[in-house]
Image 1 (cartoon, rainbow, N blue to C red):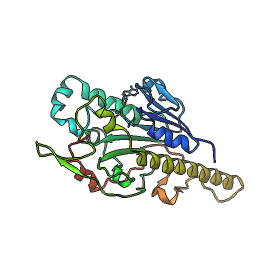
Image 2 (cartoon, helix red, strand yellow):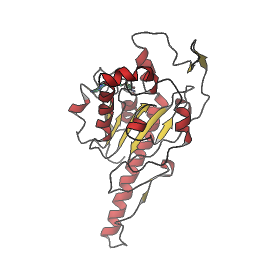
Image 3 (cartoon, rainbow, N blue to C red):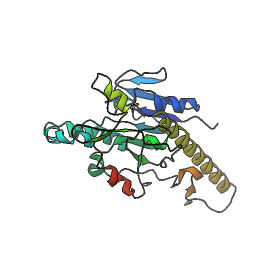
Image 4 (tube, helix red, strand yellow):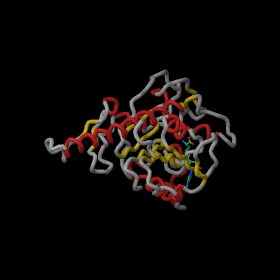
Length: 262
Ligand SMILES: C[S@@+](CC[C@H](N)C(=O)[O-])C[C@H]1O[C@@H](n2cnc3c(N)ncnc32)[C@H](O)[C@@H]1O
């Protein structure tokens, strides 16, 4: 394997994505105010302490409570007392962080209008879990995830109020309900680790090969757009680091925007 990637999984207590990267030999650290639920490299504390720590990649799962559509009925109060702005500011810490590659995950919410629309909306049923949970990804210098195993969307439950909720999500109130609902599905965690690490390592190899060719006096490669692996469906300009990889979001975003669960 090439040099292991140094990856920060921000706002992760479950260890799901960290463990998926670690299993591939990478140097992955999760960070949360809470302790980690599975043994592994974990920083328990404020992510601001370590965010600019020279990471090759940051994958962030910021809290959605005050910025996602499921809390819309409380938006007026949350705007008035500053909670919503605090949620937006926290999300934007990751959008503006120094890491060359960043993914931010959140349910459908106000960031699509406060900042920009997500690059992709994924669901667990595209990654081997019979569950529906539209999940937005904002990607900086990373490709969209390719579904790994499409299965049924699972069962639904209609609430007294007429809302159609996935059965897995419709749990009785409990201390840990939010944790069950917010933990990253294993199939998605594995897809992130496999696809994004393969993409970065292959981009680095292409870049080294291009430089080697240039050093050998081959035709200049200075403005070459390097092609990502076939699975990545995108191209990456190696010397420019920005959020410009976004393609126009599909209409799936507008369709999913009506969902009322977080
Ligand atoms: C929506 S949950 C994400 C859970 C994640 N998908 C997982 O599998 O563990 C958001 C997490 O952000 C954490 N969090 C909130 N503020 C934080 C901060 N300043 N630094 C680190 N973690 C923080 C919360 O404790 C919570 O566990």
